[in-house]
Length: 364
Ligand code: V47
Ligand code: SF4
Image (cartoon, rainbow, N blue to C red; front, side):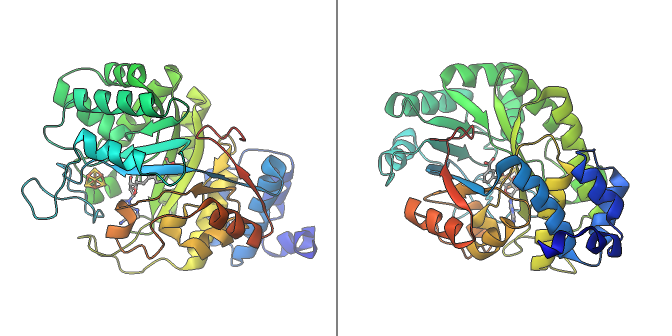
């Protein structure tokens, strides 16, 4: 490809980074900042595509999944979150076990992955979640239950006055297969203090994921960007994830989440551009040399931008989803769910080969 000729990267001041990428050398913090400062986002995207092609060829993955949000009542009050309600506030809900199971039963396709997350409810005890997982496992023994962010795990531990490891062990015994990647937001303490001061700290979030990995529970990881953080905070976040993966080897997929601005109390000066989203996705692919997959989460990105992301280093399109609240409360204009045929058509539409996977990224 013309764009990949070495003088193109030299002209962009990225010749040495191109050589490092070709030699599979680890990029530094300064390399990451230079990728952000490069005037040509296509050069950064082309480098990320080299890594993506090496790892996955032209494959783009998707999963038949089902999201369930069990409550929006939350004690944390994160400034960016449009989804949360205080207890007693209009619009607050808690699903009964029967209501949650009815959603599983009504899934248009038998899901291979069940993604369950919710707010940190002040009184929902661990027995509710154990019963929920056990009942789903009985109905769908093959599906992977990818449930509860590290922030929820920390909250359950506080409510039950037990260690997070015990929470993980009890949920694992009830059927938990994986943790989703939410709650990481941005690790830099000064930003975290402003956008989610009551949430687990970066160190707590990372420790819970590493604890899960030690128990054989794989996890995903995320980064919420495009709010009040600096680009340097994004690089710092990616490096902390990379170091965590070096220690515990359990992260499967990274999900970059652009901040959606509606109905939140967090005001920002400069909304993200589409190109800045793509550049951030590409830099994630380049910095996270030890995390196999980068997800273009179509719910938050929008379907067309998610397609573009498949050309900027991402290799996964997430899945059918069926019902989504967190992004849609914040102004996401994407559909609630997509069909298998729809996902495949979108992936083919950008020249990639659709590959159906399970939650662990085994091809099915
Ligand atoms: O942790 C909340 C983010 C996350 C907003 O692991 C927002 O496979 C943008 O983590 N604008 C939850 N983002 C979603 C999540 C996720 C989604 C899909 C798949 C997986 C996976 C994980 O959503 C939260 C927070 O970072 N979020 N509010 C907002 N206004
Ligand atoms: Fe609660 Fe999660 Fe929303 Fe924060 S992002 S307020 S923890 S539901």
